[in-house]
Image: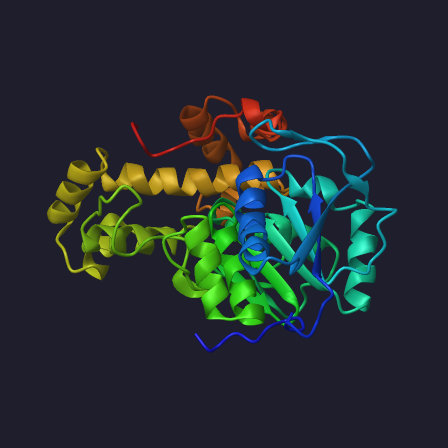
Length: 346
């Protein structure tokens, strides 16, 4: 990846004004992303013994807002009263970003864009920026569980699987701990590598990851376990052929294995046959589209490789215990009470 250029002016020792960040917390926001994003700036201030960065917590109205894990944050500044003079505005949202498609925050974000304010999004914040129309012609990042829905809703915006993306005044991130990587990269660009390293060390961040490292580990899983490379390649091949599924024989051919060898790999490392695993991938994508978009059920079925809506609904209910239309309603219950599908233990 080419060297990233800073989307905002450097905060040098000659510039005594703190770099101001507006943090817009939408209902259901990602609490981990908030903490991970803020603490590198807090650490940078501490290590330099001056206020390099300052931030304001913003909400829609002045009521407290609840994160996806149930954490409640009060004392927010109403978006209608904070103005648009920040250096950087960051939208933090998680499940249900479509609820803000008609929100008053969209006009505020457009005003900020007209003032050349840098705009960012954590987790599903890219959706809100896209609804506001301020991501046109740019690349973006969002949490992997929402990438398929984003691509369906905004086909003209380049959505990859990056940890974070900086593109001409727009900073988007998949959320979680990767938010710290984005913050540390901002510090590196503005203050230099020494302070970025110091801030990372202070919060015990193992290393500064580049945005293009991707959301999926290539050498090992977080707990140290790594599946064989050919099994990983097979899963990737399946994920790339969701709308028009290929046969297991074709998947095996693509990764240089016989069908029997591939089946053995899947049984050993996932506990299920490759055909079942492939079906689960398609259904997981379908559930994301059902609960995160307003696409018709038939459109979701086709996008996930099912020939008709009735077959799709039967298969969907068998996997998740309720029909797609019902899941569209119940899948939007309060965030802390949700459970989500997983290949584990199936």
